Image (cartoon, rainbow, N blue to C red; front, side, top):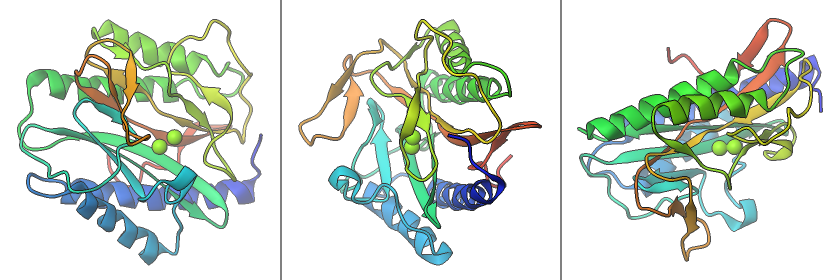
Length: 249
Ligand code: MG
Ligand code: MG
């Protein structure tokens, strides 16, 4: 699906709201704060910007952000979990403006974390940017996953297979999928106006995942740490345009 200039403008606006949700939740996340409190911070941004949530009610999901600490990979439900010094926390959220979606995630250190945790966060973010760099006119979509995988595995980490990125537009999850690994074929040729959510999930140990009994929380099978970074990005004449970046450097 290729988006026209009006559609891209709406997605740019949705992306700015998501970036602000990130800024506010990042600033609020510290030892002693609960993940439910972070959800409320993100809800306040949506309300203030006149945006709606694409997470709340998604297959019954009860919050506007996902909060996934430590060995949790994605889809954690905000609640009574109280952040503590040494945690890492992944926050994933989205927003809808005039029917158009943004979706992005980050992982942060809470207080002082181990060197391995810090390196996992750094490498996962770097793998996202290596993937974004591939979103150029005429290239093939699965170069994204190849680049992500290369960065993650060169650092001695692994990429999750069961959960992947996606095209995005009038729905949060559109086809085609964007794997974080080389799936064995180059995939579609990239054209201007295509928009994707690229979202590497990188594990410190092996790539295998487990779904917890709440039906949402996905954790590493080996119990080791996992990090997650995501942006919503358009393919433009001038290269990749990241909608969910905000003003952060
Ligand atoms: Mg997301
Ligand atoms: Mg996504």
